[in-house]
Image 1 (cartoon, rainbow, N blue to C red):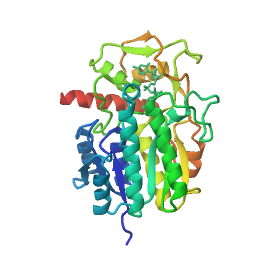
Image 2: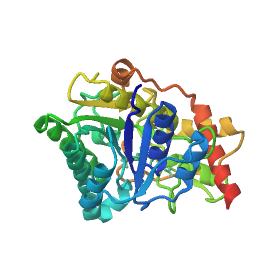
Image 3: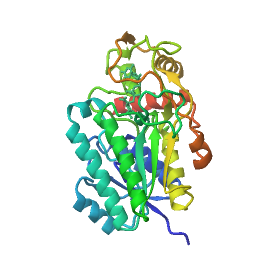
Length: 344
Ligand code: UD1
C-alpha cells in the first residue's frame, strides 16, 4: 500500500496557506499546519477542518525563527515536503521596519531549509511573488524576464529567499526547490469558510472593495487614473485563490514524483490576462449586483503601471491552469465578507 506523503505547511493558518491545506488534503496528502499566529487567528484553520471534514489535522503553534523548535518539528514528524509561507507581507510596514522583515523572513526560511535538509526531506516549495519583476520592460512576463531591484524590503526578502533556495539546491544534492511567483491572489473558498482576514485597514484592493461594500469602509480610493493603460488605472493579473492553491498540489506532486526537469524551478502563477483596477471594480459590481462607493485618488507610491503573467510554463510543465471565472471569484470574495459580517 502506498504510504501517504506528508506536507508541512509553514504559515498554514493564513490566507494562502489555509487554501493550500484544503487542496492538499483533498488531493490525498497528509498535512501538518504550523503557524506562529502573528498575523491571523484560528478562523481559517477551523474553516479548513470544516471544509475537509477532518478534525485531526495536526496544528503546531510555533515560530520558524526559532531553530530549536524547527528542528524539533522535523525530529518528531516524518515530513516529505515543505511549503513555506511563514513570512511578513506588508510592503509599507517593511519600509518602516526593514530589520523586522529581514530577520523574520530570512531566518525562518534558513531554519526550514537547514532542518529539512538534515532530516532528508529536501523538497522545498517557496511562495514568491511577481513583485520580483518590478516594473517590467516587456509584458507579459515569463520566468526568464529579468528581476528588477526590489523597491521595498518586503520585495527584497522575496528575492533573497529565492536566492537562498537556488544556492542551497546548488550546494546540497539532497535539496530540491520550486519557487512559485504569485501574481495578485484574490477571492475565497466557495464554501465561504476561509478567506482573507486583513488586520486594520486593508492594503490590497479586493479586501478594501469587500469592506466598502459591507459598510466597514466609507469609500474605496482608486489610486490613479492617469496611468498609460487603456482606462488609465493600473493593470494586474488577478488570480483566484483556489486556482492558486491547486498550483501547489501540482508542484508538490512534481517534486515528490521526481518529475522536476532541474533541481531548482520557477513558475509564474497567474491567469495571463490583465485586468485594470476599474475593470475589477466593475466586475465586482456586476457579479454581486451592487454599486460600490469609490472615488479617484492620487497614485500610490511604489505601484507599477501594469504586470501580468505569461503562465505557459506552469500550463505546460506543471500541467496547471487558472480555471475560475473572475465573476465567480469576486462573488466568493463577497460571500466571505458577508460570512465575516454575520459573525460580528
Ligand atoms: C501588492 C504587492 C505585492 C504583494 C501583493 C500581495 C507592491 C508593489 N506589491 O501587489 O508584492 O505580493 O500586494 O497581494 O506593493 N488599489 C487601489 N485602491 C486600494 C488598494 C489598491 O486603487 O485601496 C490599486 C493599487 O494601486 C494597484 C491595484 O489596486 O494598482 C492592486 O493593488 P494591491 O491589491 O495592493 O496589490 P499590488 O500592489 O499589485
